[in-house]
Image 1 (cartoon, rainbow, N blue to C red):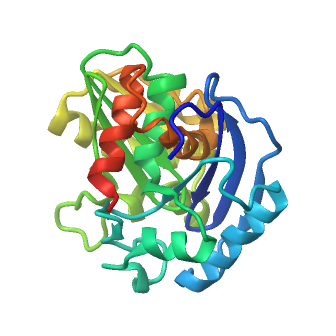
Image 2: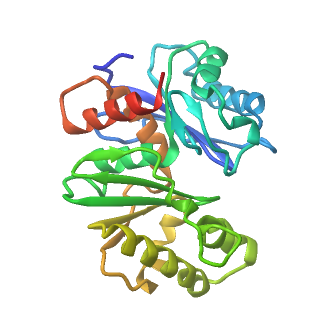
Length: 273
């Protein structure tokens, strides 16, 4: 992968939508319009690959001249997806990175979607320069999390799947933004569920900062002031684009010019072949 690139493509695959854009690696800003297509019903591998082709075709970046990073909503280790919370079970223990590389005819960097959002906020956003432990959460179809301690990313934290005592469903079924939509909750009702979630995570990990990403973060003023926590909690600077920007930032891997390049390098090493 080119390490002195000034731009890269980021593709963020989610449970409901697949988004992509060309990103300026110096500033973290989008150099193109954001392209979004619906995640195919059932989210089987071949259908998701076809949708990624549509995104890249629309962006006009189908060859390997511009580095490509892909974010995916699953545990990613050694290029394999080990979970499938909001996509087809076919992805469990699946050689996803090789599948995308073969299907796209090019090398890629491939990692968990929340982890790359964490990389974006570390390099360009709310986690930049923060000491101690930062926990980023993405509130959407599910709850993704990224844990960053003193600039070091701990991959695949999956704190959205914390179990609730005495309940059959986990945290993300109860408190993700999709729960608000599904159950037609108002902001205070949903904030009460978030209060339980963030209080529980706060007790377990004693973080120094919470960052809230995902599409709903653009409405942060509606629900963050309703939370009562010891830990500061702020919206992600890059909101729902953090996954795109972080995926593109994986092109910094093996470029030792700054600490975030090292984070990207560590993430690639931990999750790729």
